[in-house]
Image (cartoon, rainbow, N blue to C red; front, top):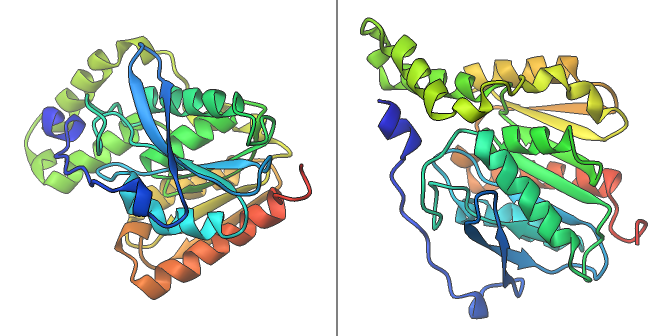
Length: 271
């Protein structure tokens, strides 16, 4: 059960960037441990903030391209990449622990470019990507606004949700031993506190928390984070999770996310 959770099936999408709308370019960076990640940078207004779009668990960067397009259309620079164990990136997921370091490395690498604002970044992430986004926002002063969708307080919460979805939690000891194995595999993060402990560090950072009615456990976890977060903050409730939305629902949702960033991180004003 633990192996299947941390090594989800991958079906990497392949694209020819030369014919892709938005004229993206590849941009590689080094993650902790020395591995390379290749991401796609969709250019906006030169010198404008960059928004890093973080896919969720059992997803990949190709699944969030419509949001990328919506943000780029409003002059944001937009960057996305595949987390470990997803899409084109090898390895296994840690449900947020190591992904946080990957995202922080992406922000640091982007800040070294001369075509993006090095001091103002936006983050959007769903479930695992939401955890990583909030974790980075709590500790990096370059994050000027962020939106998290169906996020959670601790990677162990996500593991528990996945085990319960499998139906195997009814067997004696399954939850206990998968949790134990997960903690042993991530022993280096044994002292990592839940995000709610330091969420006060996001004081003065505009933030949007999104809940989906069809993912009850994650919706509840996101609500708890919203309640504990300092102002300024907003909440948005959706009937269906982002990955399962119809085209019309997704367009409406993405418009609300874009408006949040336009109000919180306007591209032209911060130049």
